Amino acid sequence: LEPFTVQGEAPTLSFWHQYETEASYDGGYISISTDEVNFQEVDSEIIRGHYRGVSQSSPPLGGLNSFWGNSNGFIFAFA
Image (cartoon, rainbow, N blue to C red; front, side):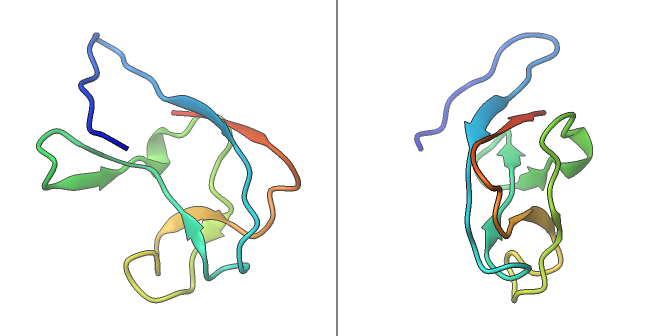
């Protein structure tokens, strides 16, 4: 994805997605940046479609809350 600027006083991110990964080892997470260098995970800001749990894999995913396993179809995420 190309970087884009978000405007407004209370921006949100929402999307539908599905995944089928190796449980606890492969997955994905949401992060944001204001300078394209320093990134911050948004797990505490997810309102709907929460992560499955902490990944047991090696960094960079290891030790982070993330989407992993099987979503059993599309799910809606809102942060």
